[in-house]
Figure 1 (tube, rainbow, N blue to C red):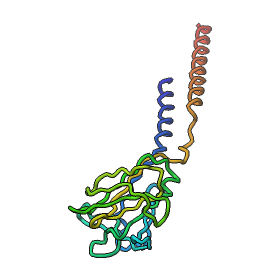
Figure 2 (figure 1 turned 180 degrees about the vertical axis):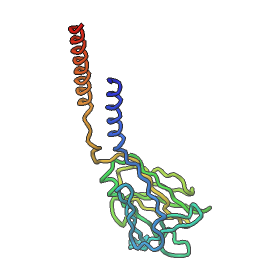
Figure 3 (figure 1 turned 90 degrees about the vertical axis):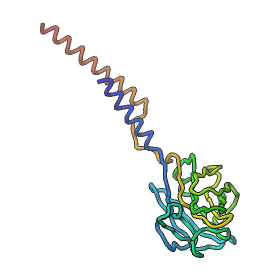
Figure 4 (figure 1 turned 30 degrees about the vertical axis):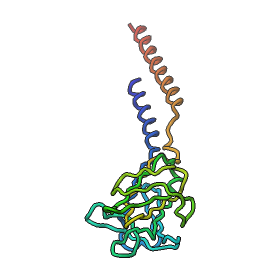
Length: 215
């Protein structure tokens, strides 16, 4: 009985701790086509809003691209034959809701449609319609890019340095700021366990005494 109680208590505690995890993946290949100047993507009740801009910070139209070729899926801009992000445009991802709801430990982005000779840049900012500070430069297709200085910036912008590219995905790792489902505190489990074991022992002693009297 004691072992069963301890196992049950530990299970509830582990569930309460585990339920606070909030690892989210945003993929940007749906919806497709003309998205207007902004589009909101929601996973697990947490939203990321994408906005399109020219290099002069004027609003510009986003494009959702879906293609049978794996690296040709993602978020681009509506212009030209490729509908991708070139060096005269950028897409800014607004992570305000993410940071409001989660304690974020890491952000990992993938950039797609990076052909030979092409490259991209990722910026961090705390202002809408401003690329801000250069954080990452790269030229590898579908690479897992760990964004630095997590928690410093609420907005991340992607532009091409050479050629044109797509934002394929964003992975968020962290824990929810919302309290986990209510469960007794560990101290309550201990006290309850001690009390339950004590009562069981007392009941056994009473039964033994009664049996001896009858004998």
